[in-house]
Image (cartoon, rainbow, N blue to C red; front, top):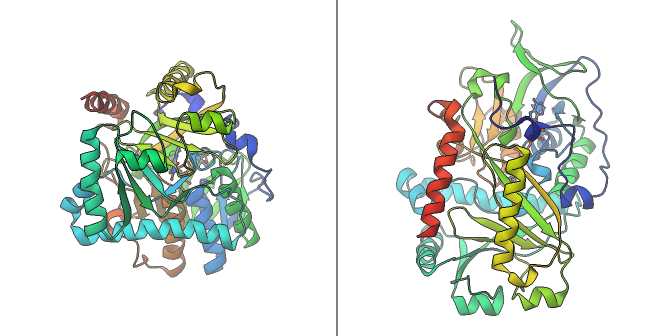
Length: 448
Ligand SMILES: Cc1cc2nc3c(=O)[nH]c(=O)nc-3n(C[C@H](O)[C@H](O)[C@H](O)COP(=O)(O)OP(=O)(O)OC[C@H]3O[C@@H](n4cnc5c(N)ncnc54)[C@H](O)[C@@H]3O)c2cc1C
C-alpha cells in the first residue's frame, strides 16, 4: 500500500532540522531499539504525546507492563516539531457548527475536556518537574479583516454565554495597545487557558517520567507487521524482534502506517504544516514592528498562520504546507511562508531565518478525533485526528486511553463526540486531491 506523501516525509532515521531539536537538552532516558523477541501487557505503536502519555499513565496509575515502539527517535513525529501552542481546540469543527450538530451539552463536554487537557499538561510539567520554557498565558486569535472580526464577536458570545469558556474580545485599538500593532489586524479574541511551550522538551520530559514509572521505550523500532495469534495475542514485528502483547494502542496520528491494519485504512487526512524561526530579534526590532506579547497567536484566515515569540526573542511563524511532500514542494512552502512573514512585518525583511521544518497534522472526515477501541477487536485501542492541536489533546487522549485500558471501561469524562473510529474517506486514494480542492477553496474564501 502506497503512503500518501513522498517517502522523505517518512524518513524515520533523520530528525527534522528544527529549532527544537537544536535547543532541547539530550534525552535523559534510555530507549534502545527492540533487539530480541519480548512481551508485555500493552504495546504502544508511536512515541509521541499520545503514546508517551498513555505509557506514563498506564505505568503510574495502573501498574501495567507497557512498552512503546517508535520508528524514529522518541518525539520524531509531530510531538517533537510542533509550534508549542498548548490551547483549547482539537477538532476541525466551528463552534456553532458543533453545537448545531451535536447539541449544547455535547459541545460543553468537549470544551470542558479541552480545558482539562491544558490543565493536565500544566500538572504534568509541574509534577514531573519538566522545564518546558512556558511562555505566554493565553491564545490570541487576530481578525484579518472587519468581516472576520464580526465572526470573532459571534464566537466570543458562544464561548462565554453558551460554553462558559474564559474569552475576551479586544478592539483593534486594544490589540495595538496590549499585544500587536499592525495595519493587518482588526481586533482579536483572547482565550484561556493557554500557553506556549518547547514541544520537544515536553516530549522528552514525558518520556523520562514514563520510564521512571517503569515503562520501556524502544526507538528505532518501526513496526513492520501486526498480526494476531489464535489466542488473540498481538504480534508486532520490528527488524530487531517481535513484541507480543495482549493489548495494542495505535498512536501514530498523521504518520499512520495504514498498511498495518485494514481497519485503519483511509480514516485520516494528514496535512503538511511548516514552520520557520528567525534569529533572535533585538528588543528594538521587535517593538518597531509592534510585537509586544508573549502569548501565542493565530490569525482568522481559513488557511491560518500561527506565530509566537520565543523566550530568546526569536519569532516562530507557521502555515499549511505543500500537498505532495516532495523536496521541491518543501522549498516552495518555505518561500511562501517567509514572504508572508515579511509582508506582515516588513521591518523584519532583513532578519535571517535560521530554522525551517515541517510535519504532518492529522484531520479526519468527521472533523473530530478518534479516541477509542475497535468494536470487532476490543484489545486494539487508537487515538488520533487532533486537527493541528495535540500538545494538550494528544496528551489528554493518552491518559484517557490508559484509564480505559487500566480499568476496562471507557472513562466517563471522555466525550462521546470523540469516542468512535472516524469514518473512512470516500475513495481514500483521492485524499490528496480532496485536500488540494479544499486549499483552493480556502484561499478563495480568504481573498474575499
Ligand atoms: C508543524 C506542526 C505544528 C503543530 N503545531 C501545534 C501546536 O502548536 N499546538 C498543538 O497542540 N499541536 C500542534 N501540532 C499537532 C501536534 O503536534 C500533534 O497533534 C501531536 O503531536 C500528535 O501526537 P501523537 O503522539 O498522536 O503523534 P506523533 O507525535 O506524530 O507521533 C506518532 C509517532 O508514530 C511513529 N510511527 C509511525 N509509524 C510507525 C511504525 N510503523 N512503528 C513505530 N512507530 C511509528 C512516528 O515516528 C511518530 O513519532 C502541530 C503539528 C505539526 C506537524
